[in-house]
Length: 186
Length: 377
Image 1 (cartoon, each protein chain N blue to C red):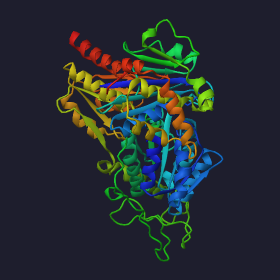
Image 2 (spheres, rainbow over the protein chains, first blue to last red):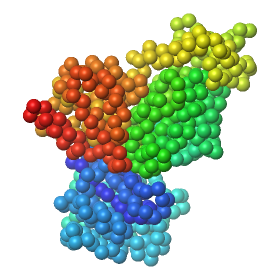
Image 3 (tube, rainbow over the protein chains, first blue to last red):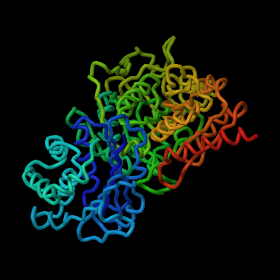
Image 4 (cartoon, rainbow over the protein chains, first blue to last red):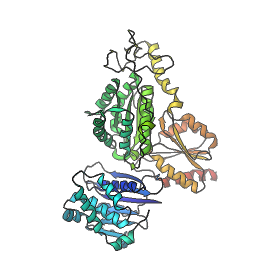
């Protein structure tokens, strides 16, 4: 079993870190994980994608072939990466974006990730952590201890409360009904 | 842990205590991690003004007795070449990491490639010995960089650690060995040899001179010119010829010690897929899929990529019907494989130079195509 996840957006939004956190949470939960990324030469802006592959057995090929999960935080990344998805793929995108026709709306979660980071958590830059909280609530990948361990390793001291709030606000964006529908056991 | 981080942690475990470099994608994390970690273990990190100076600083530091490393990518690797040659001739151990990216020139800075394979062998001018090692996982990166330092010290030569973006920028789980599980070669240092000043004299039964720590008592000369046992330049052709020959033979006569390969499912295979570095991840996946289809496919992966594992591949040829070379370039290791195998077997090739990674399905299709074409004949 090989579960392929793609995280996409604009450089600087933290989608690479989001994918790293998911990969490290997976290792903390005793799973195999491989993480990689592709981005352009720009430090900020530009299309950015990161990939995390999870499984219970050794993962050989390290790149995503056809993702079963897509996170998109910009319209460009949503339009581009929605074109090549596994048949049962789940798409999570920011609510400000419009879903391309090729994606079944029943398999999509359009969530106010960016607005939640800005208005409820109070910092736009926590959008990636909000997204991680939403991803884990929707897919039910890891228990809370593994997820917080994944986040803890990557946040500066003194920002813990802010990040725990971002995780919780992200999880709150996904209803229990949605979580039951999209739950993915590995 | 990321491949680039494993490179640094392994190097520190090997005793590396000096790093000079000029950051460049996709090797930058190596410089970042060295800047963080070396001061914690009593080492020194310095960002130099460019790659030429970085390589010179590494040679200088190593000459004083410290295990030293630099890291770079394509354009920087080109710039380091002249001083790598200096290290080869003056026999100064060091490790040069090249995390390959798509080129030539600045190319596609963030995209994977294996286009520096031949440059790792022939990048610096003149006949010179080269050892180059390539890992295919984060775990292997940690252990193999230690081996790179050990070989560098043992043979007193720069060792190229030829990574690629696939492994350098990949994160995966790593089990770090306990320090007492590791074999670390210490530098064999001799401080005095009396009045003879024969700092480049090779002791009986050895292939390299003992290394004196520069600046710790005895004055001696290091030069990029051909030199005699005193270390001073010479125009004596017999002396120069003997020196160059010894440099080549210290590697050429110790291939059993230096060359390592990974072989997977080759014993009953009629097809060997040859690959190195990150490409092996797609090949392993393709081999397993091909086996599931009933094809007898195995993998032959040079871990020591220079010298090319000629004897190891040759030993496999009698059992094989065909060989497929898969690499992220326009056909570089292919030339070595053809040299060894093409007289006996068909050698197929699958390469890619657009900055993307070869997927297992392409390898599988190529295997089916090769087998089908022969069956149709």
